[in-house]
Image 1 (tube, each protein chain N blue to C red):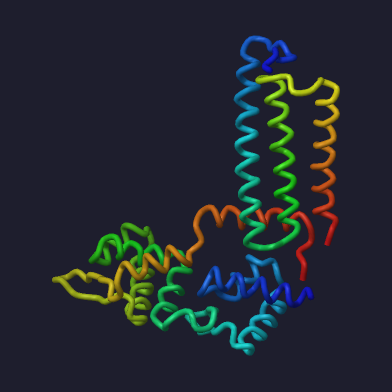
Image 2: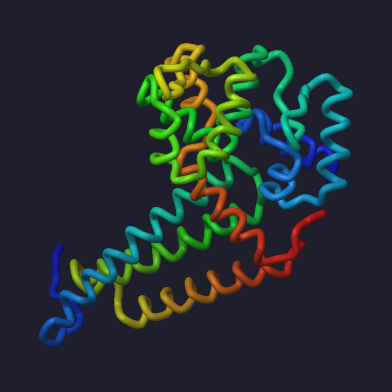
Length: 101
Length: 175
């Protein structure tokens, strides 16, 4: 069931938010597919990590966009917790990719 | 186990990029020159790949897949200027040397050097028309297009390779 978005955007901010979120989602999905292609070509685990990172990034922003603009899919506190957890996971994966031989 | 992995990676790369050379393998796979040489020797001795020398480079192919003239075309398609020149001849059918110079934006001497190699390899022929020299394909254009389509990497694969290289460069390359 559709409900009102939780935020009240100022003039013009809603459009900027929507356009930038959609651009982020599209670019991260393109990077996800590119990294999957790269993994298929190289079979390197580190490239698979890149695919996971881009997938998490895309999921994070899809949830953010849907929740803010389309429908309130989860309470704000849960969304904030999920958002920061995914950001942490992305950073940990990046760190892991750098330090792991 | 790791050695086997590198052998497989090199073999897979040669399957996807027939006519590739040592430095290209080293750069694209992020391996040391010695490692690549070791695995190439191993693969060649095992009869899985063959090689031939072309100008300064030794080019590698999977055994039994390509005829001599196809190997010549692949070697050309692996070099940017020579590839552009060949594709221009495919497109224009019978261009003059001046047309090629104008199109590629390189000197007449360079064009001369490239066309001489293509003529020697039997891929194109030269004819004189007054004071102009014209160049035509000896092989079927369709044949070149098929090889180009099947064995040259497309833009998407080039991008995915760059992404892999960028990600791998975050940490020390495995040797």
